[in-house]
Length: 416
Image (cartoon, rainbow, N blue to C red; front, side, top):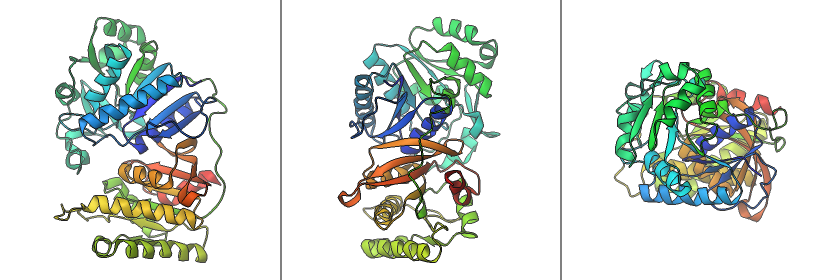
């Protein structure tokens, strides 16, 4: 029976948390959406529900999160972990605050910590201000994110308009005093969302220890560093096996652009053409699929790269009924499904929205977490159900901002 049930607001965030849980000894699967999966999960120690709720309307995000919570409770999960991005991606009205409020209300709980810090990926919190590397959040590339522009670094100011509860802060001085000090400070706070400073892995371990009896945790994946699972030596799932590979990069983040630029010097590549997709979507996708198939015929060990954005490109707002970002996402999802039918068994996908679209296109219901490629990026074994046939595949869902510059060329090494 699972010990921990998590609700993640996007697919890459779900695998990010699942990777950390596996590293801490939890046999973990990512379940796609709030519906119950087709396979049994009773042998797991943790279940992470992957939603596409980060940028959904508030009411929809809350409804889906509550449905996921009910499923997790039905499965017997003892604690609930609300997972959001370590850069606190949200709008002035949600969806982090409303979802946390709803989960607390459903469980009859009043308080939860708010811990987006993930030092391994450069996310730290000091005096309630979130930093990305050395930059305050509002001065980082997240300032101009196309869906959730983050123009304030102060988590208390960001969160206050999103929640009905008071927002409080526990600073570094208390955290560095140890778990008992944090626990005592929390005990003085009856009903609130409590932002907790954290700059190191040791801080996260302290916070996790202090909240060991709390029914609800909220944060990025880093907070899981302080948890301890029952299977420290056997939590990682096996690979689905060998087969042709492909990289599908839909993210427009600065990190992914650099990764694309590096990979283009090594891998055969093809950029999506927005004009061609608008003029003949099916035909343009067919050309991309044929490009990948032809590359496999030349060298089956060299994964082709299909990508959306080069360095220096800008996705301008479109006057069309279908925005460019949505069109690119649909195209990459269609490519994924058709390439799996043609034999692809390893898919590395970049971008949260793209990852969600690809997993849905494959008809996957659960991802079993295996080898880690980079902090927050694992390979996962799953079954695809394209055109009615079941095919075992390995997928890696990479948040746009995660991974080193060479991830598209080195990710395959851990599967060998």
